[in-house]
Length: 115
Length: 115
Image (cartoon, rainbow over all chains, first blue to last red; front, side):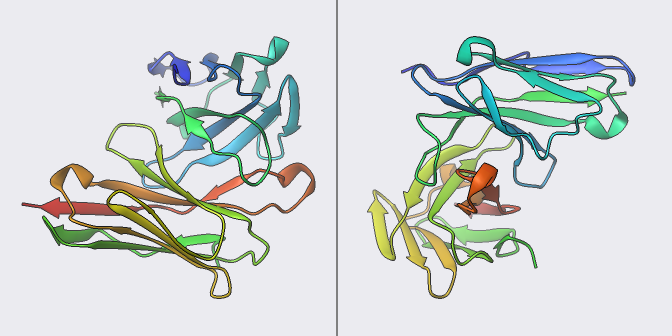
């Protein structure tokens, strides 16, 4: 079974530039998550999708961040404009279902550096 | 008080010893608990999940859960240098509504197994 796929793996941009990250979940996984991980910290949830519906985006900074999951499969997370503080690793995860007993599997992440 | 707290590290153990990693959580209604291993520069990898009080064993790993004490631990027997990584505790708070299925992570404990 193929794992969660993310691209790009690394991205370096100037502040105020836009950036986009792409994620393809494990086949058959209906729930998709975007997390942000700062150095020395655990991942923090940005947004959760069930199929194509964003069911929890309470932690997404909506002034600059946006996400979509068209057709309920792959997803894109965008930042526009990027700020220095956005430098972090952006992780995508998926699970077969939502709920308290779901096991979430992570992709390799995208390491973003904003200069 | 942080929602999920892990014992401060780094933790250093000799090869062949038992490594004990601890985690406490604040929400008494939490339903499920997960341990992830994260190698430097890599994404979190799920190694154990536990839902009921007691012990759950998988190879050299044993997860222990005590909901009354709001405590979950991970024991690694016969520790190997390849076990050197950051271990993340994650708790599904099942707070209902949009938080259904949301994982909250601790800050991680760095484990070093020296030969």
